[in-house]
Amino acid sequence: MPTITVLPHEELCPQGNVFEATAGTRLCDALQQHGVDIEHVCEKSCVCTSCHVIIRSGFDSLRAASDDEEDQLGKAWGFEPQSRLSCQVRLGDADLQVEIPRYTLNVVSEYG
Image 1: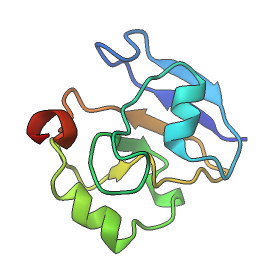
Image 2: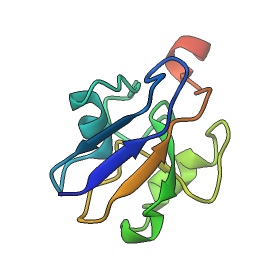
Image 3: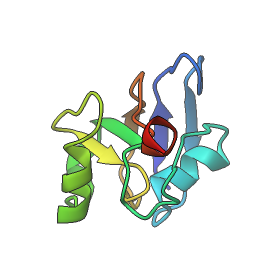
Image 4: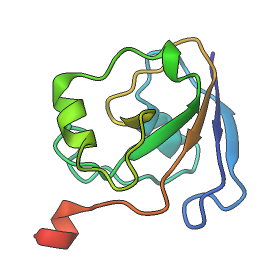
């Protein structure tokens, strides 16, 4: 079971969070199951960036992002080379350190 370390985020987890999760679980689901209420406006269908995270440690252990995910990541606020959409990341056996960006672009509330 990988250990997921979530760095402190002002609104979603001010103290940070550390938990173990089951390999194969979507990162978005694991975060929510452990009290980190990350947005996922598109219901995990890879058509928004509301669940954008930055993998600070363990990035190389993850499967490469799909072309669809890469297309969406290009629109993410605060995009970095280690950015991923948490709805598209399936946990492996490696530990991860995750940062949730300060801002997110919620196209449903911003443009809907």
